[in-house]
Image (spheres, rainbow, N blue to C red):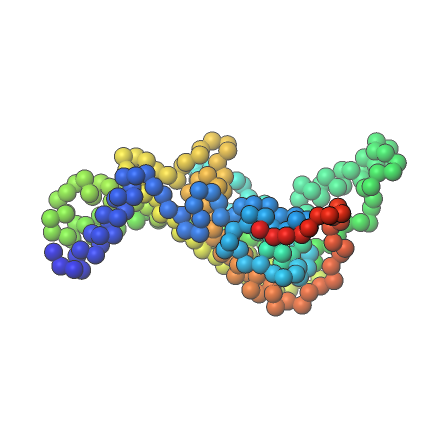
Length: 273
C-alpha cells in the first residue's frame, strides 16, 4: 500500500475509532453552545473565550428579525429565531448597548397603558418619554446546509486495494457526516439608513456514529435548542464567528452619544468573565 493510499485510511480509522466510542466533535465548542454565560451590570460572565470584545460601547442597537425568515432545514427542532442568541453576543462583547424592540417593548407599552387606565400605583416608575432610541439596527441572516460526507469516504476506501471489499468499513464510513452553517450580520445606521457594516460567519461540525447513532437529533422534543443539538451548536458557532467579524468593523465607527448607564447598587464591581 503506497503512502498516498495509507493517508486517507489513517484519517478514516481515526474517525471509526471516535465513532465506536460514540464521540462527536463540534468546532469552536463542545458540551454546549459556544454562546453561553450572561451579560448585564456585572459585565460578561462565562462568555466564550473566542468572543471578540470592545473596550467601550459604540452606540445603542436593536435586533431585527430577518423579514425573509431563516433557512432551518425541516425536522431540526431548533428555535424559530437566532435573535436572542445574537442579543447575548452583542451585550457580552461590550460593543453595543442593546435596546429591546420585541417582547420587552411590548411589556413597557402595556405597563404604560395600565398606568394610564388607573390600574398601577400613582407613584409607578413607568413614565412616557424615558425609552432609549436604537441608533443602529442589527439584522441577522442564516443559511444552514447539511453535507453527508460518508459517501465521499466510501469512494476513497473503494480505491484502496484490500479495503474496498470490507463491507463493514464501508458501512461505518456512511455514518460520518459534516454539518455546516453560514450566517451574516448587517448593521444599519437608523439616522441615515446607511448600511455601515456587514459580516459573514461560518462553522462546521462533524458527526461520527455507528449502528444508527446519529447525533444530530440529540436532545429532541420541545427542549431542543442551540446547545443540545449538533445543528444548533454549529449555527451558534457561525453567529459567533460573524459577530467577531462585525466587531472588527464596529471598532472603527465613531461612537455616538450614549444614554446614562444602567444604575448599579453600591459596592457592586463591574467585571467581565
